[in-house]
Image (tube, rainbow, N blue to C red; front, side, top):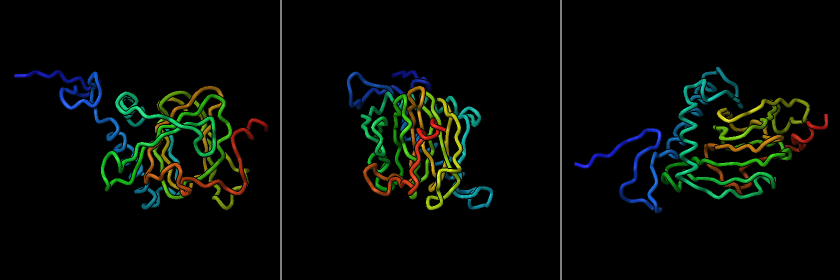
Length: 225
């Protein structure tokens, strides 16, 4: 009888069917991250419907506070190893940001409408303008590095750059926000790498992917005040 050692930290061993040589471990990490993102957004929308939250909502904290610290660290590490992807710039018209998208429809089947993006902000990124995703919600895990998340509770039409708040983000933090939240990221002092779950997935080159308000603002302007 064949005995196969199972190490939960390493995932399962691939004994047949490996697409690459040498064979790699398998953990199903990409699909699991999709499931984590779906769960968080489902809960956020339930609280919006119940009246506990207003829309758009923005939730922020450490993954460890939700018992997810080790899980997200493991999934992020395995995704990097098991599903290599080429990041390309510019992203959302910003040369210092590179990104790529795993399509849920392509990987998990035609019935899926979600996707997972990997985004890398080069050190010194201050030029990504405040924008909204009018048609998609986000669950984001900070994979590596540190930076800042900026947001406004003004609407797209109201935005005048006078009511902007921010919070520092570091590896292990998670951000959940629903569509139509005005926001951006910056990485002034070091590289920032994110895994961003999109529900639904909208291709990067689709004009519906993001919208910039008439009053254009980027974190660089905050450095001048």
